[in-house]
Length: 145
Image (tube, rainbow, N blue to C red):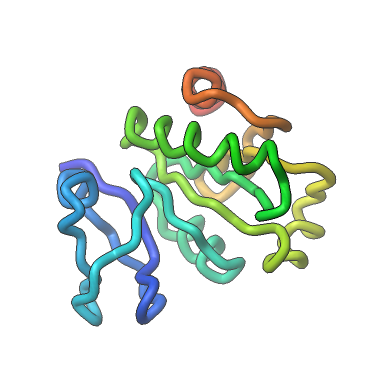
C-alpha cells in the first residue's frame, strides 16, 4: 500500500497515511482522531515538522517554499498540488518563508517560489520559479533517480 506523511493540524502529530484514504478525504489523525488537512497530497509544515518528516520519510520529499504576498507562489500552489496527485511515491510539503524565516536562511533561499527535492534527508536538487504540474513532474523524474 502506498503512503505519504502529513502533520495533524489539530494536535501537530506526525501521521503516515495511505494514499487511498488521503485522496478520499478519509484520512484521520492516529492520535486525536481529527481529520487531516491535505490539499491533494500536500501538507503545510513548520520547520520542526519539516525536519521530522525528512527524518522518517522512506521516500523522496519535495518542498515548495513560498509566501502569501508572492504572486508567482499563488499561481504555483495549485500546480504543485496537481503534481502531488500524479506522484504518490513522493511526499509533498509546503513551507511558508514568512513564518519559517530561520529555515529559509539556513537553506539559503534567496527567491521564491523555490522547489527543493530531498532524498534520504539530503537536498538533491532545487528549481527556482513557478512551474506547471508537468514541469514539477519533469523535475521529479530527472532528479529522484
